[in-house]
Length: 196
Image (cartoon, rainbow, N blue to C red; front, side, top):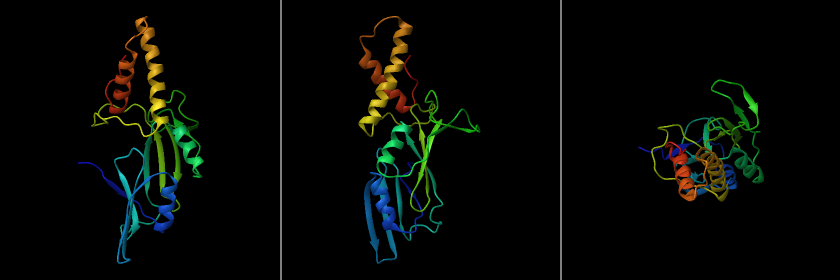
């Protein structure tokens, strides 16, 4: 089973369509049946799950949805959204579950710890959570994808830091560093143990 679509409640389908288009999300469908039903589908970049909104698709109150977006770099994603004229919260982090929010990203950029948020015109909340390394068992795929050159660059930089530690441990220059980087980056995205 795969989660394919999440329905979000909106008051004005046209206004919402303009908003999600402005985010750079892919418009997959927009069709109506005799004015009583309309479904609009968008997919965030890199996502396998889409959103639906429109007319006659849900009885939930507009603005009542709270959804999470996983991003590899919350600071860069926030800046990208701001450049698209989206009002985005400041980045905050938590030092552990149930702990208070602190300003800025997690000092070590620990996975699952840094957040920022924005809302659509109806108030549906989108919480962006930075995840670069999945907890074991949280990924059921062997595929890795990068949704932008910035995501790929960030992954390469994380691999570079980890590889530097690897070379310190071995005490020698690793001539096979491309293979090590590739293994690290694939393991990071698919939740496998990272090479040391």
